[in-house]
Amino acid sequence: MVLGTSSGAGKSWLATALCRWYSNQGLKVAPFKAQNMSNNARVVPGPGGAMGEIGSAQYFQSLAARAAPEVRMNPLLLKPETDTRSQVVLLGQVHADLGALPWRGRSARVWPQIAAALDALRAQNDVLVIEGAGSPAEINLYASDIVNLRVARHAAARCLLVTDIDRGGAFAHLYGTWALLPEADRRSICGFVLNKFRGDAALLEPAPQMLQALTGVPTVATIPMQWQHGLPEEDGMSDERSQGAGAVHTTVAVVACPRISNLDEFQPLRNLPGVRLLWARSPADLAGLRATDWVILPGSKATAADLAWLRAQGLDQAIATHAAQGGMVLGICGGLQMLGEALIDSAGIDGNAPGLGLLPLVTRFEPAKTVRRTRVRFPALQGAWAALSGLQASGYEIHHGQTVLHPAAMSAARPPEGAHTAAAGAGIPVSAARPPEGAHTVAAGAGIPVSAARPPEGAHTAAAGAGIPVSAARPPEGAHTAAAGAGIPVSAGGGLARELIPGLAWQNGAGNVLGLYLHGLLEDPAALQALFGRAGAAALPTPDAMFDGLARTIDACFAPGVLQALIAPGPAPAA
Image (cartoon, rainbow, N blue to C red):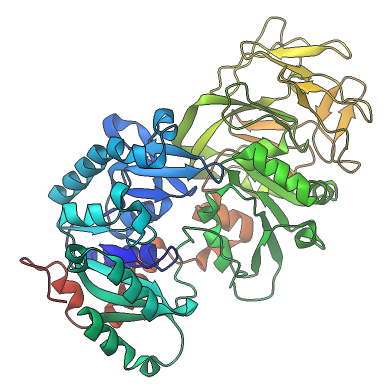
């Protein structure tokens, strides 16, 4: 089991490396983390064949272990929605009742399922690589712990304690963590690991020997700083710019909203030759972008709140300006929802808000959550995103929102009298008749009245009958217009938007703004080749090459025999 002195110490990295190292010894290996708190999730099979969510770290660890990912590998996933509330996902499925419980009261309810998953995986594998969370020495949480010491005791695990020496104070962190553990739990610590070391390792002497004299625990590995190990950051975004070789020809600016989710899907961009990846937190970060540069609105666990934050920073105008100048804009999941006209939330899932108006879309949040793997073929695309035309791509969807074209835009197609269209899995039939000037339409069955006309300057409209005031401030000229007096929303740059893939993908008429519910497009080698060229895609390491590199690193850094001793039969190796 890999424990850490803090978050960010390197637990996930080390657990992933151990999964591949033991798998390379010909052993059947699986990862496990009882509870993960992260908005980075992947879609994997669950009980009975239903698809569910686990933390991205355990997904990658399963690939490193050459094991099929499944929900038992991360039975409890907490997805933060605010600073004081998280969505609770148990065995892959959302449980609102558990989310309503206090933190300490939840432990007794979920431990039986955690223990059952742990026991089943132990029985089915030669080696189970378990990752802890935060620090095992959170003394205020001992009584309700379900992820660190309780798991270690239940599994009789042999533990490594890893620390980030780059932060300073590593030996104090190791000693303090060890000292705060109950005596019986100290005996499970088989070795200390110094991670992210830079400099001359000889300068560490005699501290490891002194620490062993105090604790009886040897320092079994010193791992150098790994700048380009290839794994995405689990707990947050890296502020390092991309390390791609060669002169920069494309800047990709990802808007770094407070509740950003699934940011791990942008990891491949960091190493693409000629591509600079940056995290945009202010309009200054988007200043000077060219039309060939990208702005990405990523997924969000709190779309309405992140949209309000985006406006407060002034990023809404910066994004609209980039789009109006023909710049490439990509919205993914929550980012797609932000690009539309309105967010409608009568179920209390996320919140009501006016959108950015770069695509004529309306999103309604539903209690049921879409969680599925998805494979698509793009039709012919226009403009800047034409390189995706005909591409087959694989990814996944995780969203509460169901998105449709604004009813006025849908009516522009004038289908036969009495005809209805189905909004891509949302089951929202929309009236075929174009509304009279100034009238409202209702997305039949959904109860969404939406204004058919652009409000006059200084006015407000009530979106979806939910009393959503729509800001009177309009994006720059060209970013949002009305069609020929008909009250039909027109996408940024002119021309009616198109639904490319039902319920999944939309593009504006000018071709520079694209919205998708599909996560993982930028991890698909075929998509990267289409968008950045053969040389760029070929420069990316395969997952197996990345995992084997991690395994070689720890093989070189651990003291001889330590990794074998951790799984040897019999009592734990003497500290």
